[in-house]
Amino acid sequence: DTGVSQNPRHKITKRGQNVTFRCDPISEHNRLYWYRQTLGQGPEFLTYFQNEAQLEKSRLLSDRFSAERPKGSFSTLEIQRTEQGDSAMYLCASSTPPRIYGYTFGSGTRLTVV
Amino acid sequence: QKEVEQNSGPLSVPEGAIASLNCTYSDRGSQSFFWYRQYSGKSPELIMSIYSNGDKEDGRFTAQLNKASQYVSLLIRDSQPSDSATYLCAAQRGFGAGTRLTVKP
Image (tube, rainbow over all chains, first blue to last red; front, side):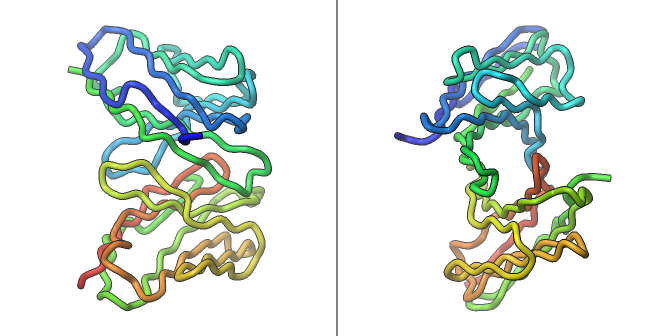
């Protein structure tokens, strides 16, 4: 197992376009999280899955954002009608119960909206 | 009020000194707390977790938790230049903004 994998590593898109990112968690981890991080800030929680169920979604997440984890394995995060304010590093993390084990993060997808 | 507050620093210590990093949290229901290290341009890496009051030691790192004061700290003994990074405190889903540590040779 090579850890949490995220693709693509970098994405440049024009404002108004849709983008989709993929995350492959560690295989035995049933919990998957999406975070967004901007320069000088800590990761900001977006959403959380346990297996295929989306259990929590930040109120900061507008309806332009949607995430899926169809078979409880990989997950996708889609941003529709991107805006310049969406430019950030999008981090995926996975974990296994109990919570005390913390997260393993992927390398992230850096999104630049021009 | 943010879930986790950290002094953003920057914090600079000489090589071999003790670096002390602190954070406070707002949710008294939080049970587990974490310290992550993030090198510039990289993703966060878990270095310590703590869930009981008191100290937890792992090598040069000691995490301290005081639930009554809602306070978590991380001590790094014998600091090395390779410890230079941003340290993120986390509780439940929330992360602090991070404290940037520089260890000078």
